[in-house]
Picture 1 (tube, helix red, strand yellow):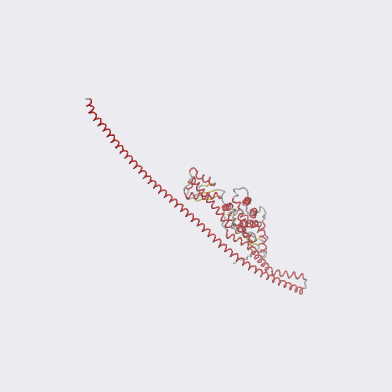
Picture 2: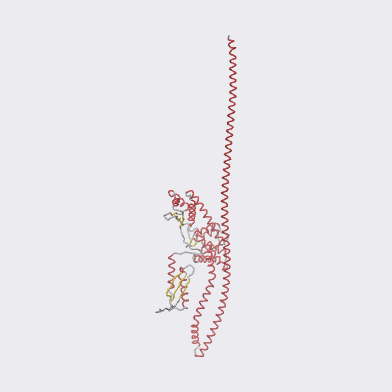
Length: 526
């Protein structure tokens, strides 16, 4: 029974085991298939991610290439603009050089013409002297003949006859002698002053300019009053930043569309002016932008200063100069003295000193160099203690300038006695440049005092009725009493007034004295 029961149970067990095995096998295959599907899905996801990464990389690459091309285009445009600007500057310099060459040619032609005219005048003067000698000989012969005749007729002594004849000849020839003396005096005076006037005329042709007043403020025009608020900024931070960076005070008041920059240093004022103009035109005004613009303006001003210094060295033709001195020369373009630009005054002094040196056989190039550097101390006299003469001497010694240059700087104002001929020439050229008409401005008080002094000196001469100072004190016209002064005496009065003016007054340029004598007759028709 048990065996039979076991015998019936074995197939069931075997069948169960087979079911288990089959189920395990089926589960294994199902798991394998599921795993393969997961692997395929993972691969597909990886491939999708890789593909998206490639697309993003290509996009980033294209954007980077586009940005690089844009930057290259911008740099190329800036370079082209810079090249155009440099070409424009070169063309401008070439034009200026051509104009200078033409001006030099004209001056050489004028000088040749003046020399020819001077030669003709000398020939005519010699002929006039010969005529005068002949006239003198004829007068002596006439005097001798009349002396003999008077002695025979009147039985007078020789001394008495001589006195009668001399009085008669003096009365007859007084007018002719006075006219001749006046003519020869004016002629000799013109010949003596010709070369000096030529030098001053050349300086006037090249350097004469409108006079300006020395200022410590600059005025900026803004488009509207709203811009004032933007310049001031929130709680005044913009204006404080600009004043701190430039060292210049900004004065913003009720004056419409105007901002005033106030500062003693003209270079700082120029930096502030350029920076503020850039900020106003750009419209973006905030502390960060202000720092950037001020730094750019400072760089531009430094470049301008060096360029002005190099142009001055080139224009004065003084050869090589130390770069620091060139920069100091450029700073003089922002300085004025009695309204006269100090850099232009230095160039003019160099030019005149060179001309004077050439005339007397001195070193022309060295004279120009000394003239150009004679006021170099004014570039830093507001920063360094001492007079501009002492500062200039110190700078010249530091940069090992020749002793003639140092002597010219030390003696051009008469503080010390000049030890070289160059020093004397530079002092003379400095005085010529300052004294020429239109070079410097003066106060109203000085001007009025000079006019009053002119009239007082003229009126103090015996025989003068009235005197008038005209043409801003460059001429005085004197009216004499016709019943007390004759035509010959007015020449003497003009000379006396001239000598008194030279002895008692200090004045720029020259003063012309004109003496007038007239006789009027009037009647009334009834």
